[in-house]
Image (spheres, rainbow, N blue to C red):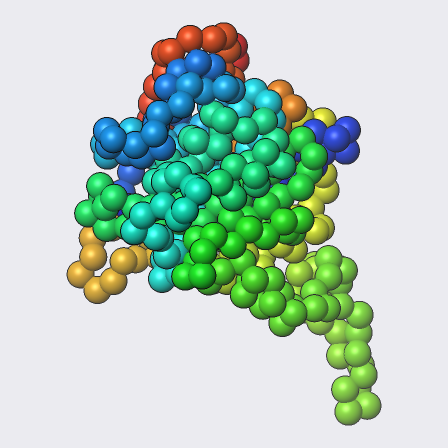
Length: 333
């Protein structure tokens, strides 16, 4: 399973904390579901039987990929306010064959489910990460190469990356993540774009002549990269987070966040897998979640309708909703 994505955290003017992501992939969403896991439901650390199982301390809602045993949770928010997103990390993710001493193993495809079920804050999630080892049982036939962006009601955004030297945890990050390379590389790459502003470029004297830019008063963002590679999407998302107008409250913030993803939204037809490949990588779905309300908002690209789901109650039941029929599940508990 490989997919490209872009994610960032945000805060509204009234103090609501949001996390959003695009879900970019070849194919469609037939094996994806929005799931609502209730407090008390069993949470497995692996995809197949034989891994640790713990009762969920918090209910959570998010998107999952089915068909590999336990659901691979790719993003979500729990009722305590912890939010997270899993993004593809090819060529960099490295896993241990077995758990390190005094830690327990967790499959990378189950890490978000494990954290959302057990942790009530970013601080708790960081402590939990130090007590586990990411291992991969190759249930999918190949390792699931992933890194993660976590955030919550404190506003702190944490990046967790399984690298060759172990699990790297970057606290107080800028709250932006795309795909490979690693987070620190992306952060260093931003130095190439120092000077980008949201202001128009003023006229400039060149060889004694006054030269005015084209599109006067529309020159903000000049110098930003325009392709859909991971480095370019990271740069655009970072500057969008810097300059985009924050929402007044949750609903206004959610609406603005969906719109803010437009510059990294991959349209069908522009990113082809290669010569002879029939399909295209494209943005299939966008999701935004709120730490304070616990509401999970999502919009499939096919209809752009925003639906919202929030877990409610205790119990062992897990609810599954199809993303392909969002019009049938537009509700809030």
